[in-house]
Length: 86
Image (cartoon, rainbow, N blue to C red; front, side, top):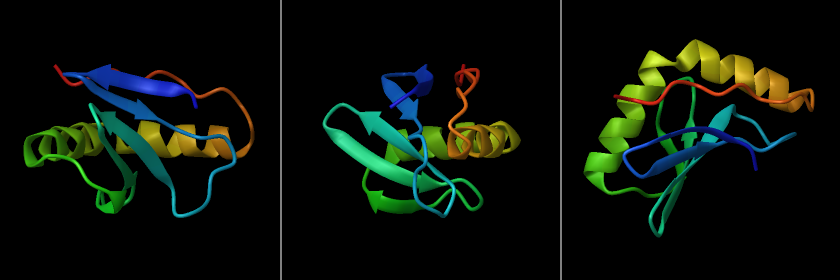
């Protein structure tokens, strides 16, 4: 699964040809979650509150880039790296 971004121990990834709605995968230590891009809500799994807050903040800043990467992944094209949260 291609890595899109990494910050503060949080890894953001996307699958090629994944199911709808558009989402990204998050790994933080032993925690895993799927986050819907449009509304930045947890579809599956869970994250500690602080990590979830950072992911939502990052997602809001990069929503258009995430949607473009979703389109690329759906077309089996390489995804682009997205700047980390600083």
